[in-house]
Length: 311
Image (tube, rainbow, N blue to C red; front, top):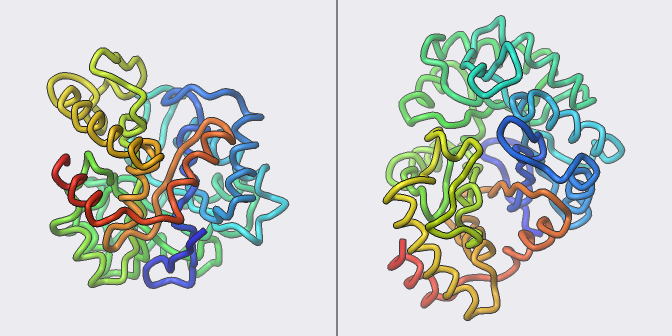
Protein backbone atom coordinates (compact mmCIF):
# COMPACT_ATOMS: atom_id res chain seq x y z
CA UNK A 1 0.00 0.00 0.00
CA UNK A 2 1.21 3.49 -0.84
CA UNK A 3 0.73 6.31 1.68
CA UNK A 4 0.58 10.02 0.94
CA UNK A 5 0.69 13.15 3.06
CA UNK A 6 -2.71 14.84 3.37
CA UNK A 7 -2.25 18.50 2.52
CA UNK A 8 -0.65 20.67 5.20
CA UNK A 9 -1.05 18.08 7.96
CA UNK A 10 0.87 15.34 9.72
CA UNK A 11 -1.47 12.66 8.37
CA UNK A 12 -0.01 9.96 6.10
CA UNK A 13 -2.98 8.19 4.56
CA UNK A 14 -3.39 5.18 2.31
CA UNK A 15 -3.92 5.92 -1.37
CA UNK A 16 -7.09 3.84 -1.15
CA UNK A 17 -9.43 4.87 1.64
CA UNK A 18 -12.46 3.07 3.02
CA UNK A 19 -15.57 5.04 2.07
CA UNK A 20 -18.19 4.11 4.67
CA UNK A 21 -21.28 5.59 3.01
CA UNK A 22 -22.51 2.23 1.77
CA UNK A 23 -22.23 0.33 5.05
CA UNK A 24 -24.56 2.87 6.67
CA UNK A 25 -27.43 1.27 4.79
CA UNK A 26 -30.84 2.90 4.45
CA UNK A 27 -32.03 5.31 3.18
CA UNK A 28 -29.21 5.44 0.62
CA UNK A 29 -27.97 1.88 0.14
CA UNK A 30 -28.81 -1.73 0.85
CA UNK A 31 -26.18 -3.84 2.62
CA UNK A 32 -25.46 -7.50 3.22
CA UNK A 33 -25.73 -6.92 6.96
CA UNK A 34 -23.50 -5.59 9.71
CA UNK A 35 -21.32 -8.69 9.95
CA UNK A 36 -20.13 -8.61 6.30
CA UNK A 37 -19.66 -4.83 6.63
CA UNK A 38 -17.45 -5.25 9.68
CA UNK A 39 -15.46 -8.00 7.97
CA UNK A 40 -14.88 -5.64 5.03
CA UNK A 41 -13.58 -2.95 7.40
CA UNK A 42 -11.15 -5.39 9.02
CA UNK A 43 -10.04 -6.77 5.65
CA UNK A 44 -9.26 -3.23 4.51
CA UNK A 45 -7.17 -2.66 7.64
CA UNK A 46 -5.36 -5.98 7.26
CA UNK A 47 -4.43 -5.05 3.68
CA UNK A 48 -2.96 -1.68 4.62
CA UNK A 49 -5.85 0.77 4.47
CA UNK A 50 -5.49 3.24 7.35
CA UNK A 51 -7.95 5.93 6.26
CA UNK A 52 -11.64 5.44 7.05
CA UNK A 53 -14.12 8.12 6.01
CA UNK A 54 -17.69 8.36 7.22
CA UNK A 55 -20.40 10.90 8.14
CA UNK A 56 -23.27 11.12 10.61
CA UNK A 57 -25.84 11.12 7.81
CA UNK A 58 -24.64 7.75 6.47
CA UNK A 59 -27.38 5.53 7.81
CA UNK A 60 -28.23 8.26 10.36
CA UNK A 61 -25.33 7.38 12.63
CA UNK A 62 -25.09 3.69 11.79
CA UNK A 63 -21.93 3.98 9.67
CA UNK A 64 -20.08 5.84 12.41
CA UNK A 65 -21.19 3.26 14.97
CA UNK A 66 -19.97 0.34 12.85
CA UNK A 67 -16.59 1.94 12.27
CA UNK A 68 -16.28 2.89 15.92
CA UNK A 69 -16.86 -0.55 17.36
CA UNK A 70 -14.94 -2.42 14.63
CA UNK A 71 -11.83 -0.25 14.70
CA UNK A 72 -11.71 0.39 18.45
CA UNK A 73 -9.07 -2.33 19.06
CA UNK A 74 -6.77 -0.69 16.46
CA UNK A 75 -7.78 2.93 17.00
CA UNK A 76 -4.18 4.10 17.37
CA UNK A 77 -3.29 2.64 13.98
CA UNK A 78 -6.06 4.21 11.87
CA UNK A 79 -7.12 7.67 10.77
CA UNK A 80 -10.80 8.41 11.32
CA UNK A 81 -12.49 11.06 9.21
CA UNK A 82 -16.08 12.15 9.62
CA UNK A 83 -18.18 15.20 8.83
CA UNK A 84 -20.66 17.75 10.05
CA UNK A 85 -23.24 20.04 8.52
CA UNK A 86 -25.94 17.61 7.35
CA UNK A 87 -28.69 17.07 9.91
CA UNK A 88 -32.08 15.37 10.01
CA UNK A 89 -35.21 15.42 12.12
CA UNK A 90 -36.46 12.00 11.09
CA UNK A 91 -34.77 9.09 9.39
CA UNK A 92 -35.67 9.57 5.76
CA UNK A 93 -34.00 11.08 2.70
CA UNK A 94 -36.22 14.14 2.50
CA UNK A 95 -35.55 15.07 6.13
CA UNK A 96 -31.87 15.93 5.56
CA UNK A 97 -30.87 19.60 5.61
CA UNK A 98 -27.64 21.62 5.59
CA UNK A 99 -26.67 23.26 8.85
CA UNK A 100 -23.07 24.30 9.56
CA UNK A 101 -23.93 26.77 12.30
CA UNK A 102 -21.99 26.94 15.55
CA UNK A 103 -24.82 25.39 17.55
CA UNK A 104 -25.18 22.47 15.16
CA UNK A 105 -21.45 21.71 14.93
CA UNK A 106 -20.99 21.77 18.70
CA UNK A 107 -23.80 19.23 19.00
CA UNK A 108 -22.73 17.08 16.09
CA UNK A 109 -19.11 16.66 17.14
CA UNK A 110 -20.13 15.24 20.52
CA UNK A 111 -22.46 12.75 18.84
CA UNK A 112 -19.75 11.66 16.39
CA UNK A 113 -17.16 11.23 19.13
CA UNK A 114 -19.60 9.00 21.00
CA UNK A 115 -20.57 6.91 17.97
CA UNK A 116 -16.95 6.51 16.86
CA UNK A 117 -15.90 5.59 20.41
CA UNK A 118 -12.93 7.95 20.29
CA UNK A 119 -11.61 10.98 22.14
CA UNK A 120 -10.50 12.80 19.01
CA UNK A 121 -11.47 12.84 15.33
CA UNK A 122 -8.45 12.95 13.02
CA UNK A 123 -10.13 14.81 10.16
CA UNK A 124 -13.39 16.71 10.63
CA UNK A 125 -15.01 17.93 7.40
CA UNK A 126 -17.95 20.18 6.56
CA UNK A 127 -20.06 17.85 4.43
CA UNK A 128 -21.75 20.41 2.17
CA UNK A 129 -21.55 24.21 2.10
CA UNK A 130 -24.30 25.85 4.14
CA UNK A 131 -25.03 29.09 2.27
CA UNK A 132 -27.23 30.35 5.12
CA UNK A 133 -24.38 30.30 7.63
CA UNK A 134 -21.34 32.57 7.21
CA UNK A 135 -18.15 30.63 6.51
CA UNK A 136 -16.55 32.67 9.28
CA UNK A 137 -18.97 31.23 11.85
CA UNK A 138 -18.39 27.69 10.63
CA UNK A 139 -14.61 28.00 10.61
CA UNK A 140 -14.39 29.74 13.97
CA UNK A 141 -16.43 26.93 15.52
CA UNK A 142 -14.19 24.28 13.96
CA UNK A 143 -11.11 26.09 15.24
CA UNK A 144 -12.70 26.22 18.68
CA UNK A 145 -13.26 22.46 18.90
CA UNK A 146 -9.81 21.90 17.40
CA UNK A 147 -8.29 23.98 20.22
CA UNK A 148 -10.25 21.84 22.68
CA UNK A 149 -8.56 18.73 21.29
CA UNK A 150 -11.74 17.15 19.92
CA UNK A 151 -10.56 17.23 16.30
CA UNK A 152 -7.04 17.21 14.85
CA UNK A 153 -7.52 18.68 11.38
CA UNK A 154 -10.20 20.56 9.45
CA UNK A 155 -11.40 19.70 5.95
CA UNK A 156 -14.28 20.52 3.63
CA UNK A 157 -16.33 18.53 1.15
CA UNK A 158 -18.13 19.65 -2.01
CA UNK A 159 -16.77 23.20 -1.65
CA UNK A 160 -16.04 25.55 -4.54
CA UNK A 161 -12.79 27.47 -4.88
CA UNK A 162 -14.51 30.65 -3.71
CA UNK A 163 -15.91 28.92 -0.63
CA UNK A 164 -12.48 27.54 0.25
CA UNK A 165 -11.00 31.04 -0.11
CA UNK A 166 -13.51 32.25 2.49
CA UNK A 167 -12.43 29.47 4.84
CA UNK A 168 -8.76 30.31 4.44
CA UNK A 169 -9.41 33.89 5.54
CA UNK A 170 -10.25 32.48 8.98
CA UNK A 171 -8.16 29.34 9.44
CA UNK A 172 -6.38 26.41 7.80
CA UNK A 173 -8.04 23.54 5.95
CA UNK A 174 -5.99 20.50 5.00
CA UNK A 175 -8.34 18.72 2.62
CA UNK A 176 -11.14 18.93 0.08
CA UNK A 177 -13.39 15.96 -0.63
CA UNK A 178 -15.03 16.33 -4.05
CA UNK A 179 -16.68 13.87 -6.39
CA UNK A 180 -14.04 12.76 -8.89
CA UNK A 181 -13.95 9.97 -11.44
CA UNK A 182 -13.50 9.38 -15.15
CA UNK A 183 -17.13 10.44 -15.53
CA UNK A 184 -16.86 13.55 -13.31
CA UNK A 185 -13.75 15.62 -13.96
CA UNK A 186 -14.96 19.17 -13.32
CA UNK A 187 -12.44 19.77 -10.52
CA UNK A 188 -9.45 19.48 -12.85
CA UNK A 189 -9.51 22.98 -14.33
CA UNK A 190 -9.62 25.28 -11.28
CA UNK A 191 -10.14 23.28 -8.09
CA UNK A 192 -7.13 20.95 -8.20
CA UNK A 193 -4.65 23.73 -9.10
CA UNK A 194 -6.04 25.86 -6.24
CA UNK A 195 -5.71 22.98 -3.79
CA UNK A 196 -2.15 22.28 -4.95
CA UNK A 197 -1.13 25.91 -4.48
CA UNK A 198 -2.63 26.01 -1.00
CA UNK A 199 -1.46 22.60 0.25
CA UNK A 200 -5.00 21.22 0.41
CA UNK A 201 -5.10 17.47 -0.17
CA UNK A 202 -7.78 16.11 -2.51
CA UNK A 203 -9.80 13.12 -1.29
CA UNK A 204 -11.84 11.73 -4.20
CA UNK A 205 -15.25 10.29 -3.42
CA UNK A 206 -17.22 8.16 -5.86
CA UNK A 207 -14.18 7.17 -8.01
CA UNK A 208 -16.42 4.46 -9.48
CA UNK A 209 -19.28 6.90 -10.17
CA UNK A 210 -21.47 5.16 -7.59
CA UNK A 211 -20.95 1.81 -9.27
CA UNK A 212 -21.31 2.76 -12.94
CA UNK A 213 -17.58 2.40 -13.58
CA UNK A 214 -17.56 -1.15 -12.25
CA UNK A 215 -19.04 -2.14 -15.59
CA UNK A 216 -21.85 -4.18 -14.03
CA UNK A 217 -24.69 -1.99 -15.32
CA UNK A 218 -26.06 -1.52 -18.82
CA UNK A 219 -28.38 0.89 -20.63
CA UNK A 220 -31.48 -0.98 -19.45
CA UNK A 221 -30.58 -0.62 -15.74
CA UNK A 222 -33.19 1.28 -13.74
CA UNK A 223 -32.04 2.45 -10.34
CA UNK A 224 -34.59 2.41 -7.53
CA UNK A 225 -32.43 4.02 -4.83
CA UNK A 226 -31.10 7.59 -4.44
CA UNK A 227 -29.43 7.36 -7.86
CA UNK A 228 -32.80 7.87 -9.54
CA UNK A 229 -33.40 11.17 -7.71
CA UNK A 230 -30.86 13.46 -9.41
CA UNK A 231 -28.87 14.26 -6.25
CA UNK A 232 -25.42 13.76 -7.73
CA UNK A 233 -24.20 11.96 -10.84
CA UNK A 234 -25.96 10.90 -14.05
CA UNK A 235 -27.99 7.73 -13.75
CA UNK A 236 -30.92 8.27 -16.11
CA UNK A 237 -31.63 9.40 -19.65
CA UNK A 238 -29.35 10.06 -22.60
CA UNK A 239 -26.45 11.17 -20.37
CA UNK A 240 -26.47 7.84 -18.58
CA UNK A 241 -26.60 5.90 -21.85
CA UNK A 242 -23.63 7.88 -23.19
CA UNK A 243 -21.72 7.04 -20.02
CA UNK A 244 -22.43 3.34 -20.45
CA UNK A 245 -20.96 3.53 -23.97
CA UNK A 246 -17.76 4.91 -22.45
CA UNK A 247 -17.72 2.33 -19.68
CA UNK A 248 -18.09 -0.51 -22.18
CA UNK A 249 -14.99 0.73 -24.00
CA UNK A 250 -13.06 1.00 -20.73
CA UNK A 251 -14.16 -2.51 -19.78
CA UNK A 252 -12.71 -3.90 -23.01
CA UNK A 253 -9.44 -2.03 -22.43
CA UNK A 254 -9.21 -3.34 -18.86
CA UNK A 255 -10.00 -6.94 -19.74
CA UNK A 256 -7.28 -6.91 -22.39
CA UNK A 257 -4.83 -6.19 -19.57
CA UNK A 258 -6.29 -8.72 -17.14
CA UNK A 259 -7.92 -6.04 -14.98
CA UNK A 260 -11.51 -5.24 -14.13
CA UNK A 261 -13.18 -2.08 -15.33
CA UNK A 262 -13.37 -0.82 -11.75
CA UNK A 263 -9.71 -1.50 -11.04
CA UNK A 264 -8.63 0.52 -14.06
CA UNK A 265 -10.98 3.37 -13.12
CA UNK A 266 -9.67 3.55 -9.55
CA UNK A 267 -6.05 3.29 -10.66
CA UNK A 268 -6.56 6.22 -13.05
CA UNK A 269 -7.95 8.38 -10.22
CA UNK A 270 -5.09 7.62 -7.84
CA UNK A 271 -2.56 8.62 -10.50
CA UNK A 272 -3.98 12.11 -11.06
CA UNK A 273 -2.18 15.28 -10.01
CA UNK A 274 -3.09 16.55 -6.55
CA UNK A 275 -5.02 13.43 -5.60
CA UNK A 276 -4.15 11.97 -2.20
CA UNK A 277 -6.64 9.12 -1.81
CA UNK A 278 -9.63 7.55 -3.52
CA UNK A 279 -12.49 6.41 -1.30
CA UNK A 280 -14.00 3.08 -2.25
CA UNK A 281 -17.20 1.69 -0.80
CA UNK A 282 -17.83 -2.04 -0.49
CA UNK A 283 -20.41 -4.47 0.85
CA UNK A 284 -18.09 -7.33 1.78
CA UNK A 285 -14.45 -8.33 2.15
CA UNK A 286 -14.24 -9.87 -1.33
CA UNK A 287 -15.13 -6.53 -2.91
CA UNK A 288 -12.51 -4.87 -0.71
CA UNK A 289 -9.83 -7.28 -1.91
CA UNK A 290 -10.82 -6.72 -5.53
CA UNK A 291 -10.72 -2.95 -5.22
CA UNK A 292 -7.33 -2.99 -3.51
CA UNK A 293 -5.91 -4.72 -6.57
CA UNK A 294 -6.36 -1.32 -8.21
CA UNK A 295 -2.98 -0.17 -6.86
CA UNK A 296 0.60 -1.36 -7.16
CA UNK A 297 0.79 -0.98 -10.94
CA UNK A 298 0.79 1.84 -13.47
CA UNK A 299 -1.16 2.49 -16.63
CA UNK A 300 1.03 2.48 -19.72
CA UNK A 301 1.32 5.60 -21.86
CA UNK A 302 -0.76 3.85 -24.52
CA UNK A 303 -3.49 2.97 -22.03
CA UNK A 304 -3.57 6.52 -20.72
CA UNK A 305 -3.99 7.86 -24.23
CA UNK A 306 -6.82 5.43 -24.95
CA UNK A 307 -8.59 6.36 -21.70
CA UNK A 308 -8.32 10.06 -22.52
CA UNK A 309 -9.77 9.33 -25.96
CA UNK A 310 -12.74 7.58 -24.36
CA UNK A 311 -13.49 10.11 -21.63
